Image (cartoon, rainbow, N blue to C red; front, side, top):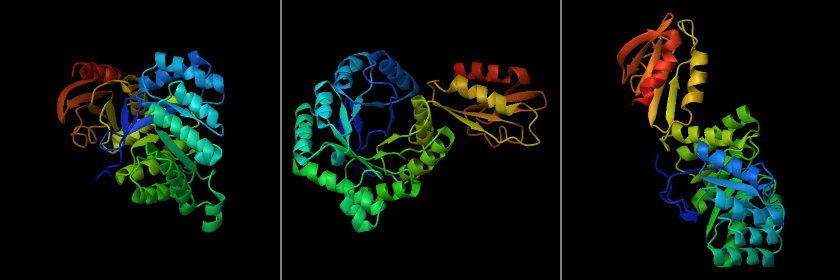
Length: 349
């Protein structure tokens, strides 16, 4: 796929847009001023491969906590602001690497002007975020309610006002819980501006449903070359968002770090407990920092032949199985030893 080249901005030391890698974000669910809990959650997100974290700033104590949180963590910190422009300014002054604001609810134009002046002084970008629940009434009236056009033109209205203040250090998000509306909105805004785009399906739902909605929405846009950073929004532990985000990028060849497991659906030919083996392998290999395709196949039919592009794999038989590399059989082992021996081989690669 040919990726659209957008303007590049810097969120802390992480580039977003341009030709830089597509980054993965998540948001903490701790009370931000509970510094220990927030730091521990960000460190866990880092472990799973998060590139940028975001936290809600609900009061001045939250804003003041940013400075200490940043001293104890390693990835950029985005301050999520709703309604109070003074908290946006306090967050920047305390070290936030980016602001997420909806200018339409931050106050009048003078207040937005104060926020942009502060961001200009500290060289902090703004993520202009609109979603289907926070659109300008004039566009809702003009286009007959929430739709692609009312989302896009509400966002452009905000962008044009901020640009009129001489501020251009922005990225944009246009989210809806409706997958088709999100796809249409991002496609349209991508044709109208070169600002980097933050992709996501807002309020996607619990882990299973939200994963599917996000994979369809975010994945379809990325497959068309649209998008520079992503957040999978799940009603689940934040690290689950990172895991899903990584798999979306890996499935499109946009991220190669980590193990990619290839496994077959079970059928009557499967003579080993394939589901248990694959489940355990996921746990063992999820944080292994090796760029490998690992095949775990239920029978010899779907083994070395169909998975010959895998770097290494196993194919089950009747109480035993084969270990193979690049389609070539290496040795035969008992079923109970299959996963253990596979892990040994991977560790030695």
